[in-house]
Image (cartoon, rainbow, N blue to C red; front, side, top):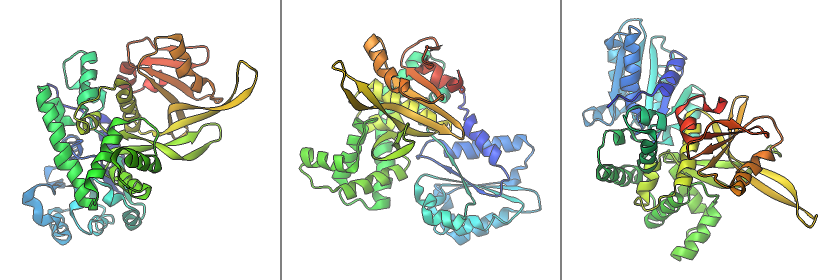
Length: 418
């Protein structure tokens, strides 16, 4: 069993070192934030010659550090560890446990010998009020559960079997070290119920607990499907005979996204170059957590693969939207009609843009046409890619559409450039 390297996040921290801002490592619980800071980044600092005494680590989830959840006690403790003019690296894990933590962190921004790094598992400390307090001095590094490349690198198994396991149980780092399906299943179900679900219920004082859990079931069962609060409200009314308003559902969806458990993808009109308000698509940050929510009943590889591709694009730093391509179609009778085609993902990073289509299988000419049509109707020169859930050589057709396997896409960091 190899150790798990998380170079993409480590490099992001290294690039932000000494930038005069508070480095905030965010992400769903148990995704590896503490390991990144306290193990990988600390190891790198020591390799650069930083003395142990200049690395100040505080784990606020440790019961023995409960007194440090008081802001004044935390401030006093950190001050007591800073000696001399050399740079000190302050690392605080799960900072959201500290009231008024903004004041504590801001206290070190003017110190030339203090470089601050914190982690947190919810959006409480990224709210508008907190951003105002930081006045642009917070610098977020979002971390996701293990990518397939990270997961695969830690195991000595064929990639095909590893991908099936990854699609089922996801990439929480603890999963890598578990041997049996029973152990993985029990872990994911327990952590979902006792950590993620309890966190959300307690933090936001959920009144309609049963309905809230049904909402999570619906999201877990319909990953990659277009939906909006009103459509979900109608579903509740039809299936559950429950009058849960669209306003309440929107609030619950925001809570789920704020907990980093799920992300929302907006629709973007590629030709009109504008966003479309609703409906949205929702993707889980980890396929294992999604499957645990529905008791591993469904085995929808197509939508799970789409979810994994979305997470990989986000891990690489892209802003990801759902593409909408309007087109005028002439029927056999000669009449024209307007249609909208969908591109799974429109990915933007600076001046770069890619159009990415997820296709689990593409074995017939009809299926090929179906997957390519939306891409062929895009009239710009940005790269267009179809990712297949099976082995296939990387090839490019006459329309400039590149087709590659899910293995090439996930395992090669520069796959979008191939």
